[in-house]
Length: 207
Image 1 (cartoon, rainbow, N blue to C red):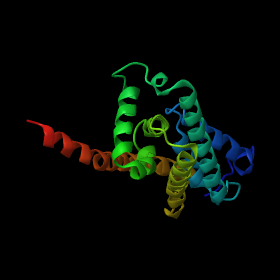
Image 2 (image 1 turned 90 degrees about the horizontal axis):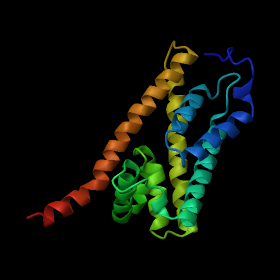
Image 3 (image 1 turned 90 degrees about the vertical axis):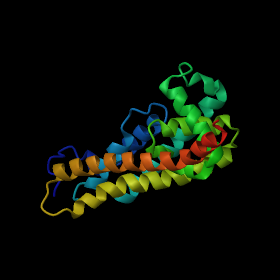
């Protein structure tokens, strides 16, 4: 595989890390931004001639993730968590309510897996801030989960390089599809596990 199509040299420049990190930071506040997909695709190109470096990609994603999390923490402290839910019953508000419950029951596991749950990153950050987590504790959770998330995204991309006889473009496509499928599966499994205790409690009080 080669990167002859990148005539600008952007993929080998420092800008790819800055722009990628900015994507991840902003996606903390605007979940539809496909930050994971960007780094999975870049991971598929890492190590190739003219491509980015895997270690710097992981670092850029980690820094962007922590910066975005801390921005969410600061805005929630400033404005209050009620500003994030447009109205009671909205999808975002329901996600925040679910995040608050999961955070109370299994805080460490939820903070580590929330990035694979739809709206999980934003809702977990808001829930942790509203629950009174100190900035120091929140930053530790953010750093650990960002490390796992970054390694996952870039790692999935890198693994596609070991597929024989495929083009660069196909490697990127395979990496993106695989990351979406794995992310969906991890989200489903973690949601089931996190909500299992709540389901048992509801069943116990049901008449």
